[in-house]
Length: 359
Ligand SMILES: NC(=O)c1ccc[n+]([C@@H]2O[C@H](COP(=O)([O-])OP(=O)(O)OC[C@H]3O[C@@H](n4cnc5c(N)ncnc54)[C@H](O)[C@@H]3O)[C@@H](O)[C@H]2O)c1
Ligand SMILES: O=C(O)C[C@H](O)C(=O)O
Image: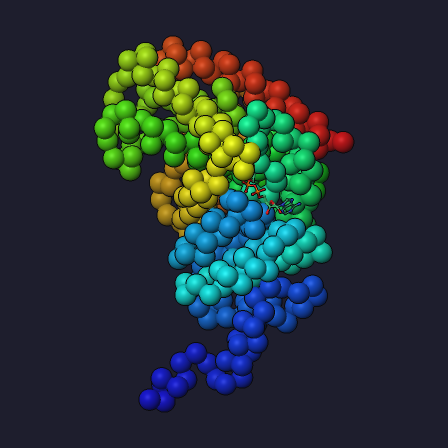
């Protein structure tokens, strides 16, 4: 009986926890709330501290919910320039282990980032029909730059997952910001291309009549149009395609984002499938941090796999982030032609990001 009463600490600790939970939204300068939240987290299941920047958006909300359900997460910080109080209050009622805290506006960015192990960035504007991802550059480049300056200052060792488009340029921008701050570690910066793999697995499974969970398609290059290069010759389980099938599948995978943008008819781009893909990828990063073996995913990273400074390919994730970047492996002629087209567009997008960050 006595043991039962003591479970959860003494009365003072319980009162402190109640006060912290009266307001899960972090108020500026209120560090005692944050301390209490962290106490509560330490008392709960062990896990990693994760921040989501752009947490109240179309991707941010389902992504935040799925990360709140992730048993590897002990503390979840939700940052946005709008609407985080409501999203945070809502999610904080879920009876999962992660403690959730909300942060609103630039004054609270540093509190949101301090102490984080993993930062996921879906902040920025999405496409409308008729736009390319590069059309988002003018707005999203500045957003990613500012957020990465915060990361360099407050959690320079965190793993960073960049979702904001155009990924082919925003990842180079992030790298330049970290270089300028003297904190750049190429092992910790990853552009999220997981949605391309998720789509490729789904579309290939449809053609083959398989369960998509049994299919694994490597997708390399980048995350826009022809830079998205599925390597159908390397799929698991091994399978061959006619040239018509390969052309159809490659085109559908490359245009998957546009398919959703058009179907949403002005109401944004992929959010739900992206949140699913982002969580699959973030979970792999956390498994790596935990020390799990053989955690291998495709991502857009600092690379020497081609002559370009960044390229998406399979990477092995571990305690330091990226432990190994894999070579592309044998490709057929169709894929080699695709690779040349991908590299041409990628070179320009990378250069655009680097020049922007240098300004
Ligand atoms: N990598 C991928 O595979 C992939 C897939 C889908 C979408 N995206 C990209 O993700 C981004 C977000 O898409 P969405 O549908 O969630 O958009 P959205 O407009 O629904 O949400 C974006 C959120 O970012 C917030 N935001 C804006 N400026 C901010 C700032 N300075 N700091 C913090 N938050 C800020 C907004 O308030 C909003 O809540 C877009 O750039 C989109 O193109 C990438
Ligand atoms: O297509 C977009 O603009 C969003 C995203 O990059 C996607 O692939 O769905």
